[in-house]
Image (tube, rainbow, N blue to C red; front, top):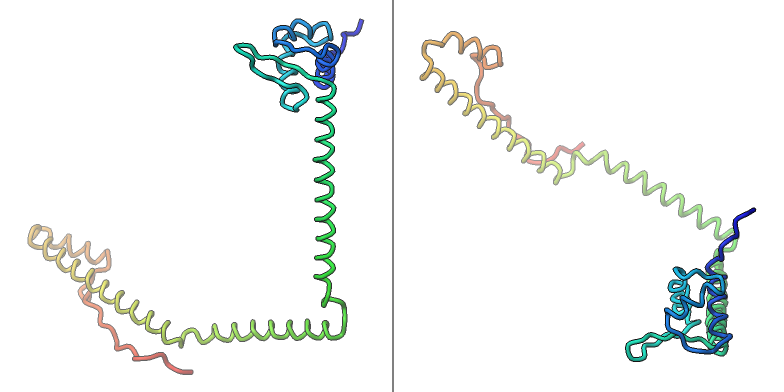
Length: 218
């Protein structure tokens, strides 16, 4: 024997509404929980089903003293349906107006964009101008090396690098002197180490050739 199918939420809502419509009376939740099973709605579901009806304004709820009462009349449901219908009708009209506005805007945007010889010629001119702009921009890049601002920046960078290199040369000479003073017996070993790391006899400060005062022209 197949198991009996339970009621869906919508079916439970309809069953609970029947209780209100048939009696047109006021109920406490505990009373509804007792009446629900008679309509096929289990006690544990009654509270959630009734609350969903309250949320949709199909059932009214009010606190009187310390008790909370629920009620619903067929006329209330009719009013609710009329309100929903009016709301949907208003939204439909608004959507229709918006659609008409968009169609009108679309038609306005099309004006002046009709295919014509003048439009084709204008588009060709635009492409030619864009191509020329790209060409000139590329040509400008070739002369960046002669840009005075770029030249001055490069000149400053060279001077900073030269100063830094000689500062490190100073540090190396200071370190060599310190090693000689503190390890005189290791003079030969130190000399070999200097040779291995590139500090040869001709190691000295860097001299920088004079830089031109401005970028050279082609």
